Length: 152
Image 1 (tube, rainbow, N blue to C red):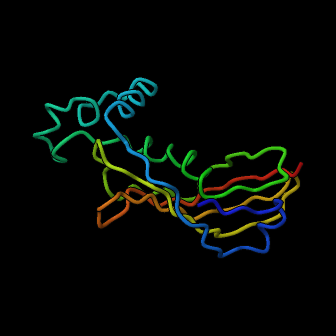
Image 2: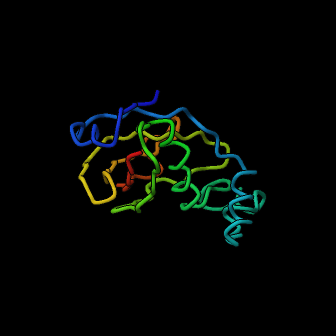
């Protein structure tokens, strides 16, 4: 379910709001292989299912940065701000990888609006995001992301 705000300014009044969770998406081997090709990171724990089966994780795992990159599509499901000319990723204040995402796992994002401040170009929001792994006791990662919402 998407939390919708009428404008960037509406974020200023919503600090602390639970933004909810995205739908689950599957992190399959094909996605992992495409990420390896895009980043030139072909470490066997990511791309060699046979070798990885006897490795420390019992199978291939997603790259940490692949899990982090999924915040883009997952957060578009969680948060929408109307009346924007532009939405810009402004970085992260904190990222921690907690649990490897095994190939075939499903993940989703759950977010809270941690902060929002007016800046010259619009409103910069900080979201506290947890990427959950379906059926796992601990999340894949936690992050504080920064996004600038430029009004239309």
